[in-house]
Image (spheres, rainbow, N blue to C red):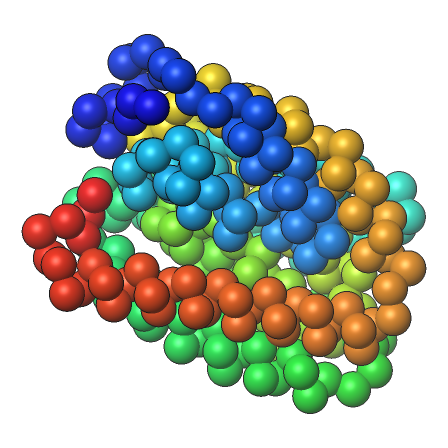
Length: 276
């Protein structure tokens, strides 16, 4: 099997001999994960593309953001139809996320991400601990004050930077912050997160196309393959017990943290390939 590109930065090279059935399976799993947890699916897509299609890390990151677009649309529609979206919060978070995605994709081609991966892993572990001890479901964010609005924009900024750098939609940070800091019910936090991820992923894709860090054909296959499972999983998630849903999300954060720690520490031990 040949590598998608020889350098990991060009997308005009033909994509040959990819195991397309496995690529489709990546999309199916990513879609289910996205709809169930309110995330973009990049936590599955980035490592899976590296594993089954030999994508270099940065190309997998950029391609993941492109694949996330149709998956997030499907999941967001499922939550929106059920009324599980905070539209005002989504608009404020999206404003910050768009700026953050520009910054994140700018940094992607300029800095090694190993240190960020380790720091982000520690943050995820702390957040997971809080999710595991969460009691009951949130009752809503209350009236929107100026401070709360600024805080929501800041959440978006942070999620956008992480989306651009790590190829995730940003839901990994949006969902727990909305539930812990703003008191949103878990289902509403997930639906709001998926809505925010759509413009974030679009912006990231546009930026990554300019730097050659996305392969659109595999991204389209992954994204389309995940549409149905994202919609189905969003309906499943809405019916979950809130405490079980929070615990499952905490488990996802732990798995994500372990993966980031492993890749980040390995990259720091081999600096010559850290940016690959």
